Amino acid sequence: MKRLLFFVAFTTTLFLSALPAASQISRVGRASTFDVATWNIEWFGATNSGPNNDALQVQNVKDILEESEIELWAVQEISNTDRFQELLTTLGPNWSGELATISGSQRVGYIWDTRVVTKRSSSHILESFSTDFGGRPPLKAEFSVALPDTTMIVTLINVHMKAFGDAQSYQKRVNASGRVKNHIDFSSLASQSVIFLGDFNDELQSSTFAGSVSPYQNFLDDTANFLTASLALEQANRPSWIGSGSGSNLDHIFISNELIASYIPSSINTMDGLKSLIGFTSQTSDHIPVYMSFGSSTVLDVDDENIPVAFQVRDLYPNPARSSVNLTFVTPSYGNVAVQLFDVLGRLVASTSYTATAGIHTVPFLFEDISPGSYFLRVIGGTSSSTRPLIVLQ
Image (cartoon, rainbow, N blue to C red; front, side, top):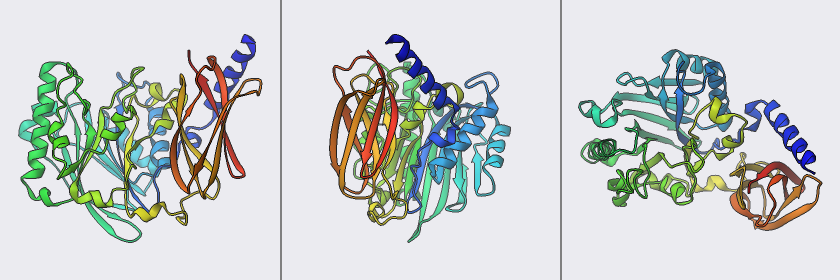
């Protein structure tokens, strides 16, 4: 039995690793919405830190940007400007990008799909307080976004806050958060659509420094003017930094009240599916993107051309898992969705079913008292089905 378990797990790993990365990346953006993401691409292009195969990192990032169909990216930790330009060249003429010019060895920047997004202006802000930002003052940019039924003008403020869990670094994050909020509150941005996002290097419910109050409590408290959208991910234990077993919520998106009406409720999410790609953390980044969507709520109607005509499984996380996983699927119509867990001998060991309306759903699947090992999860919606490998831990 042990030999069979090893053989199935080994052959499954070989099969998955042989697949091109692009074929395993879920499309999360939609033609009828404006989709924006923040992503720390660990030491992108650095020769002595982070992933050690720069060419492979460039290719993986290209695949993720293209396949996810997110139109605007705020990126951090870009360490090699030549590699960044190589990425843009590889993406082709429909993409453009820009990096900070005032920074240390890790730059912030933007990448956007020019078919939807047009840059109107960009500039560094708060340069005189650069120390509070770890030597990386925020990069502000205004964009015009063309949706099928309207045009949006949004201003993004992209940050890579001071890292580390010591008292001095924590105080710098507190100072920097206050600087950004004052810049928004007491300038023309006070009445504009603003997205504040990036690698905040701290959590929201409490700080990574001695459980102190979050450096971003000033935004959390101002519910009349800001929605701290990524708080929901932290409350659901959906970490964006995956450099350790437990992970942490370091990457965030806040929006001003002018955007709340066009924010699609609960669209804030992490690209958890990337974690199951073979070698993702060693080849691409120790962060996964955080994204959200804007547009009319009617974009979730079943008649939307981007809803698949057949059932589709988008994410299965975490994987490996201990006693439960979260399953994200899309179904084109009302009906039952069955979930079945099989062992390597094809025996059904757990099952459940859900009644789902047309659209995107994330549901829990529990499998307590299951022996550790390799399994296969089959999800059936209508006449379509999808089977994913699942590793169960002790």
